Length: 225
Image 1 (tube, helix red, strand yellow):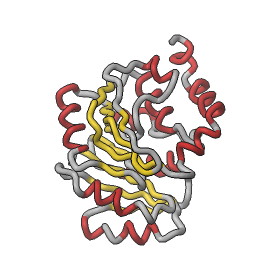
Image 2 (cartoon, rainbow, N blue to C red):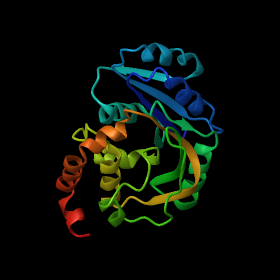
Image 3 (cartoon, one colour):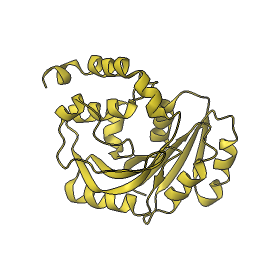
Image 4 (cartoon, rainbow, N blue to C red):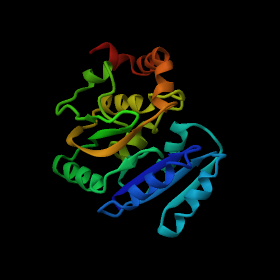
């Protein structure tokens, strides 16, 4: 299998089945790994019910999202990694379209446009041309981008210093600063759930310190832009 879909889960029993089902329903076969990050709400038991459908389930003590994703990366067999949070949903042609673009462009990162649902219902279409300079302003691609595993291993995966969030922004900046090739898709392929008490809302409370961490980790790249 060329793509490994990684689903970290921490106390997401109400949403986890939809995420797993959307991964199983892809039009191309994928490895699916659920990483339970110390859930206490029965999420692990829900995930294990999918093992008979070929889903691999890994249980670890609670270490946070960066660690859970890194655990998935280290256990994945796919050439490409697709992170999927336990409350989001892939449209059934998501992986197929991403692979189509990747094979045409030999990109290391393929980022899809997406639709919000839940509290907010809007569509987000990505810019066609993005450079490292854009990412000094904001993270212009979603966390659920297709990522070449070898590139992730080169940088050591997600930074454990980004416990409060923006770990995907840090990762993207790290990859692009090392010359990774990025392609975007102007077609919505993922449903991104908006809700109260989201990880993004929590991260925004720590915006200044998280951005400062990215700047400290990549002073040369940040300072020349």
